[in-house]
Each structure stands twice: as structure tokens, then as C-alpha cells.
Length: 194
Image 1 (cartoon, helix red, strand yellow):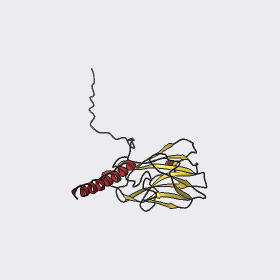
Image 2 (tube, helix red, strand yellow):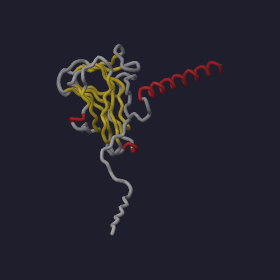
Image 3 (cartoon, one colour):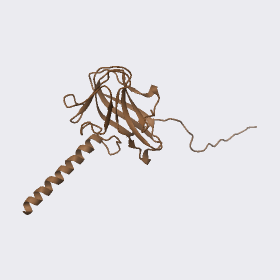
Image 4 (cartoon, helix red, strand yellow):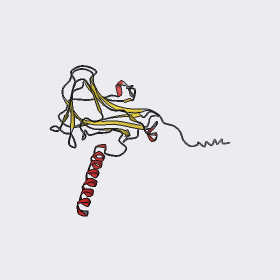
């Protein structure tokens, strides 16, 4: 009886550990705010409005799954569910990123707050370019000082099928200088001669 109980306990722990490892893999780091970043848990935590949106296991950019999105009109999109911004990111240099393959220039990546207000300018959007290889898209922005955040992939017109994977929202991977400021003091000495 002890052997059976120990075996069941071991199997239960192994199953829980595997689930935790899958979650870690798709978040890449625990700093990624996107839940189900690599679609390893299917379409969970993703909202789709219009277009054709399917889970893919045949064209996979990484892991076990990717998603395919084909817009048939303007303003069709898929997005992550909003997640609370941690205090450690308030006002910090942040980044939203993903990998894609295929698609068209009528589709772009953006980042929004929980009320669906875009946090970047139109010019800063990550516009896709049709490509047969896997390409990354990164957008740098300043994280809000409260509320929630989400990514959105949206169309400006109908377009070709694109494959998407490995979404990330969190701390920037490259610190950029937004505004230079002077820190320290200046000592000036004026010397006049005879």
C-alpha cells in the first residue's frame, strides 16, 4: 500500500512540475507579463475580434504552437487579456515584442492600456512585412504608472495569412536615452593675466 501511495504522490508531483516548466518556457523569464505568451496552452488568455484566427501546430515558430491570423477587413485583431502593471515597471523603459512569419504590411503590433487606449504613436507601431523567414518585432515605450497593459495585433485592411508566437511585454532589453540630463557639478576657473 505504501508503494502505491508513494508512486501516486511521485506522479502527481511530476505532473505539477511539468506544468510549471511549460509555463516558464513560454514566459521565457518571470518578468514577461504576457500569460500564454507562446500559445502552449492553446488560445487561452487571448481575445480575437474578426478575421480568421487559428491555433497552429503545423507552422510553429517556437515551442509546440503558434497562431495564424488572416484579416479580411480593417480593424480586425487579436490581443492578450490585460494584465496589471507591476510597481517595479511604473515609468520604466518597457518593450512589447513577438515573432512572426508571412503576413502583410496591413497588419501591425501595438501596445495598449487596459481601456484599449494605444500607448504609442501611430508611427511607432510595429508594421509587419511579408517574409518567408521568422522575424522579430520590438516596440519600446514608457510603461504607465498604473493600470493594466496588453498587446494587440491589428489590421488596417485585408491581408495575407501570418503566423505569430513568443509575445513579450515587460522591461526593455535595450535601454534608450529619451532625454539627456546633467548630473554633477561644473567647476570653472577664470584666469586673467597681466
